[in-house]
Length: 112
Length: 114
Image (cartoon, rainbow over all chains, first blue to last red; front, side):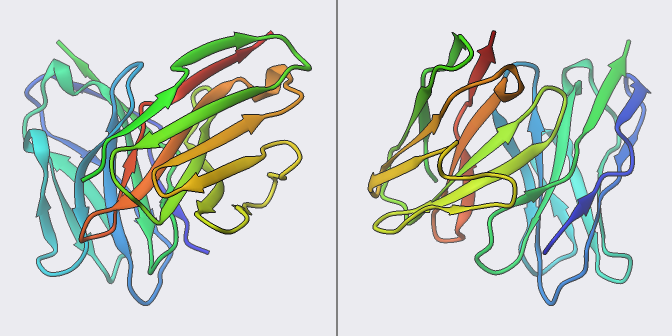
């Protein structure tokens, strides 16, 4: 079965600084990778996804992620964060027709 | 894409009672899923619900505790039976839709069991 490891449970960062949220997945023949964001007391929103093609994926709100097959990673990055980016971020993986499997989440706190 | 709504959005229940959560999708979908998100935790898949067949439960979840119905291609219910405080969680409905089989999520039902 697929699994996802988010290495950091909490990431504090100052406003306008860059941020990287790390995600590693268990290897499979072919995987689809996702990042979701959950703002306080709200539902899940898809940030970006990798299905195939270019390994650098751009998403909403200025976020991007890079699929690295050799390192089985899909780290999320943003060059300059805003206070409004404070939220919980979940990495998720699926292969074939399986349902999404989620990591434990990383709480990003942006400090003014 | 798919827009998913859930009812109720939140509820406070007494232990020993049961609550049925409804999930409505604005388009016909084959696969629907129910997840649980315990306080401060990630999402854990409870079961997959396909129309016309029994739900498939993940390890640690059983039909007697979490019966699921899937009467048609746009609707599903999850019942949390004989509740205890440990069942206090957010329950999320999800469906796979669109050309890319993307998985969409409802807003969740926040359940508190006293």
